[in-house]
Amino acid sequence: MPDLVEVYADILRALADSGVRWVQLDEPAYVADRSGAEIDALREAYTRLCATDRRPAIFVATYFGELGDALPALLDTPIEALGLDLVAGRDNLQQLAAAGHLRGKTIVAGLVDGRNVWRTDPRAAVAAGAAVTGLADQVAVSTSCSLLHVPVDLSAETALDPELRRRLAFARQKVDEVVLLGRALRDGTTSLPEPVPPAPAAWRDDTVRGRLAALRPVDRQRGAYSRRAAAQQARLGLPPLPTTTIGSFPQTGELRRARAEHRAGRLDDAGYTQRMRAEVEQVIRLQERLGLDVLVHGEPERNDMVQYFGEQLAGFAATEHGWVQSYGSRCVRPPIIHGDVARKAPMTLAWSTYAQSLTERPVKGMLTGPVTILAWSFVRADQPLGDTADQVALALRDECRDLEAAGIRVIQVDEPALRETLPLRRADQKAYLDWAVGAFRLATCGVADGTQIHTHLCYSEFGEVITAIDALDADVTSIEASRSKMEVLDDLAAVGYRRGVGPGVWDIHSPRVPSRDEIVDALRRAVAVVPAQRLWVNPDCGLKTRGYAEVEASLTHLVAAAVELRDS
Picture (tube, one colour):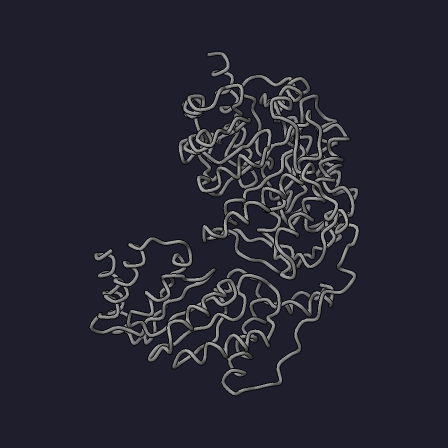
């Protein structure tokens, strides 16, 4: 730390010499649990930076939660300004009050939610801002965090329901809210906009609410795993080390053009269905030729794993231009959950049953789980997240039952966001995991013992939620593991995980094709921890971003590696 701080001090001098008057340094890591040593390091670092002989004024920005012990530590230093998230970190205000009047410092009050799309309640925000103004010499108004997380401008969304539109604020509108609140606090303006009215009655679904009220503990439980595993093996007849993929196959430019043409009305429903069915058949035939044991339909019809479902569920709305960054250069259009969620009709049944009609091998039904649908949507703020998750779970439960009734023997319910959505403070994590696990089990526990439930997790290290992964009670869990060299298997063994597991043996985030020997080595490491009769062979994640040439070569090596280990 001392060496790093000296580098920052040099940068501050250079910026001051260039005429920079203020520098913002972001420290969001301190809204999570931190040790006493880490708090001391924070205090020491900013005390040293503030002692730099020539420097701009320092503004330390924090967001996504409450600072806890880091707040007095930062106030002890000579920094000129401190930014506090007063939306996700409401206790920050109470802590600030306990510090007494702050002379010579500016508090940047994050009063406008930068992570969701709902309009700010102006009266509540002004009340919170007024409380801050009595605690510091200078107060500025801002958003709670960067506006990276929301779409740019609501004015482009002319097709949205006016009842919904009047309740929303995208980045451009949130800037207007910041200006309005700043003027109100500075000038004492009393003519604030009226608060957003309660949701209209049309957004309420009493049938869904009645179903939730009638739920019993047994609705989130399945039979003993040993009985399920025997029934599934009798029905599926799979070899040891069965091979499969995670769900999606390459989304080619031709597929994307077909979806765009269909959306624009230049390709009719019949032509679109024909094009997608041709792709599904190509994917099925490729998997059969390569020798995979459990197949997927490839998901050519899906624009995104959350948006696809949001566009088919009541209580959701889709934007036309509401793009936000997902990762790297990839952007998505998160749907908006504004009302009670219900399934209007089967969402995946036609594609899954068509794919299954093409082959004797089992084809997985593919669903996105309730936790991930919430995590990658803009969610209503007028009821607990767990209630909304259960509404989504009921819709998925109905879909699972329809898939099962139509002869689909394996259903995968993906939850890649389970770890991502974990609250930053340990004190909040149990409540989250309770409702998250409960929602997944509500979605998946309505099927018979002989129907195999898979889940898939990726994009994270899972040690912190390994007990919750076990509690999902999926028959098979496929999990990203190639980069960590199977470390997650030790975590699973430590909590007594005794069901099927598919640790990824091919890093699909790279275009590199793994050799058969590499996959064999990975599987040998896995077999040392997990008995072969419970081990599945699969890539780390879906193949949407890869090209067909590398997919075919990699899957050829994957199947050959599995066969080699079966015979050894």
